[in-house]
Length: 251
Image (cartoon, rainbow, N blue to C red; front, top):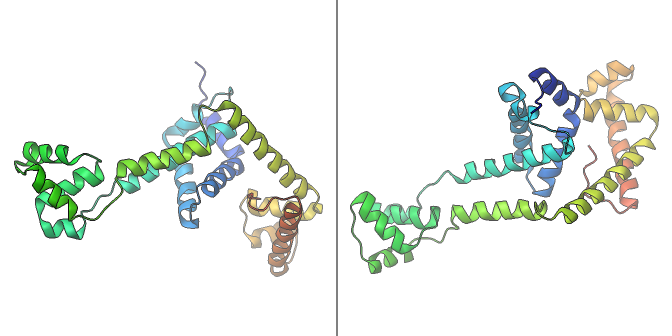
């Protein structure tokens, strides 16, 4: 089976940095991530894509588009990050106050999603603590209600599946067509800008150059460039709003 070399994978990644950033922004937008979590997802995504001699990128096959492949990889990465975040478990103050048995019951029931009967059995088998069903029930009633981490993971997975239904090929195709139509409108709005403004935006948002570097590269004054970029973005947003597009990421 054909697999890209590390050098080929590196070049593929470097040629598609802007696409990777677009995919991360879209996933962050769809999952309502705050700015700091979106930035964390982007940083970790790039680390994952380059580690082990670009092992992930080397798995890419041309049967699907690179955008679809990256979307699948970064969606899974987001789910893994959430699972790691929820994996940090701390007993509640109420459980600590009630003692070791209560802390273990809370862990078994709230963290692992086990029943009270299972919690009693685990207490006896693993910790040599024997409690009746009534005692376990009384302790559980004194503990705060906490959504089980297993349920949190299921909810997150369901949310991602609802956003990108894996078995609904027709719906996925329709969603992809809708996103492609939005991308075409965004690209058309950008193409309508003056040539120099388009170049400024590409240097700033696609290549990530600082304003000072853009000014030097294009022979422009640095200070007016800030206002010029903001004004250009406002023009773009206004054109897209006129077409009914209010939340799509531009860059």
